Length: 227
Ligand code: 6GU
Image (cartoon, rainbow, N blue to C red; front, top):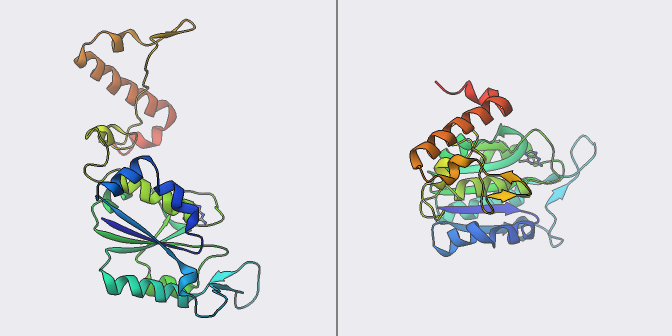
């Protein structure tokens, strides 16, 4: 998979993709993540990518020209399955969408900044608009990083334990059960006996029960999706 991220502050995301699982995925060649600085596509010498909104009002709007230039250049080099704009008024991201996007080959993620992007850029180039939740961030960079993370960790051979994505919270509409590690007792607080007994069948049953209980108390809305 290839993910191209367009932003006017791409360095915001550099360290995020340079560590741990995301770095390993790139080293292994499972995914190629490329940052593109929108300012490199500005039409004037001041590398200006935003301007005042027509009609007045607060905040700056990202101009369509650099966006068009950057997206068109990328599209001339390879084809893309989706051109995604990260925006608080998009469809709220969830695990199902991460699963779906992880099956695509090439994605462009466009980060908005300031007051957003010229509406015509959305109409002309964007195939999907995604929000990461009902709150407002100062830019789409963190949202793009979160979206990319949720996709990349699902790609084959990224997680070392092949099954671990399957036992994530949400993967089967249930929250994950509690987990414990050594010591077996901390200040009198003991790990559930069943986990120490070595009976895998009982452990599995306990985890299923705990996942259900946890979901029922914390996120009963998720159980409505189960048949
Ligand atoms: Cl994708 N962008 C911004 N700026 N704020 C958000 C968001 C995106 N998703 C939730 N809040």
